[in-house]
Length: 461
Ligand SMILES: Cc1ncc(COP(=O)(O)O)c(C=O)c1O
Image (cartoon, rainbow, N blue to C red; front, side, top):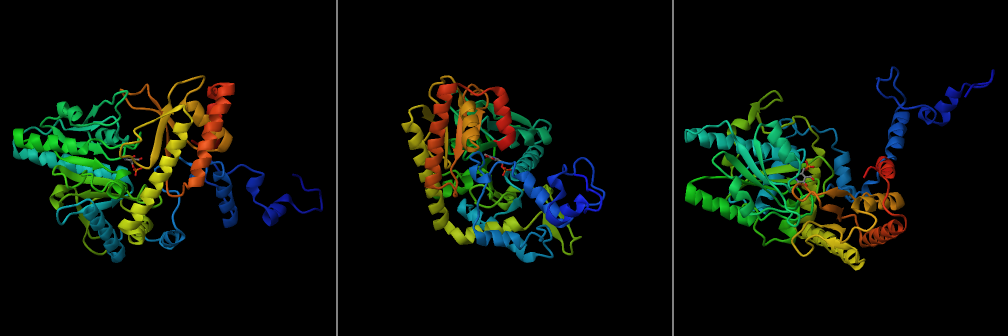
């Protein structure tokens, strides 16, 4: 836009009525020399993220997309509080400890225990598995055995973080493959992989792929027998990233936690079914002695001697406070009610999908997270990836399609999380939209690779 002589410069219009990024690209690749007014920066960011998917339509994520206004207020008013400054914010540190004690009690810890607030389950798993490695080394050294070939046993149904741990911290992963019709693992799968170099076994409570649990009771029994028969004391870590806030409420009689002798540590994501926004996880040990003392660091440069067992140092306190808010606000009764609501709504969705006569529902009668994992009973002219593409294109739902891990990689899957803000009405609408997408695909056949890529960029599924 050129300013005719004598008329105001377009920059003046921009300053008065708009934002210069309405007519210019955003800063990228180089720190802007001059900066910009706060309102412009705010609009710039806000306008860009409308290109993202709408979190409430994200059926892929296990992570919380809605919190109560009161919880949001706690978060909003505590964003400036650095969690690690324990000396300066002792009450926040005390609140963290209260959360740890409540979770330890929920998981039936036999006595005094310890744990840590983490960024999510990934950090909790890294720390828990490091402790397994350290404790294994202590046992090996005490027995005069070599310590150079640690291994960790887990199923192909685990989250990628377990393989990440093995690569980052030099541990051999012994991965039990899945089968085309079996998506969790049990003692018979684990047994052949265990030896004196096994630092531990990891079992999942609520897998990322289908929401089911490994046979944790069976694996525990195997490990108890191994200890009795061969003197091999192999600890069990339960990855309850999602399930740790579901099983205690939906299936309270199922024993998967510290009621089982070999379960030495548990991780859970507060930001999944703990119902807190992203940035909070928990690691809980069965007993204080399960945390390798050598992994705890002591420093006093924040004003008071403090012990830390974390991969990160500075981090926000807001999500810890929000977790405590939720634990106080909902209690056992509230969490049970909410989990039941989600589970009932997941059932409504699976009933609707079954009535369509096209889909297999994966393990719907088993104990499961509040989600529906399903796939096509028969592939006609289109597959699960086409359905994901079509519901995104027609209605902006982010419904993930994926292949299962080895050796079930031929199996394709769709999965819809049913969270607290996914009401009965939305479930019905999603079911209608999946039916409509299938009808479109019946007529036109599968989507092309090029079209799939376009939608992926537009709605980010
Ligand atoms: C079973 C399981 N373990 C670990 C993780 C990693 O959790 P986070 O995202 O809290 O780091 C996930 C995430 O989905 C998960 O489903």
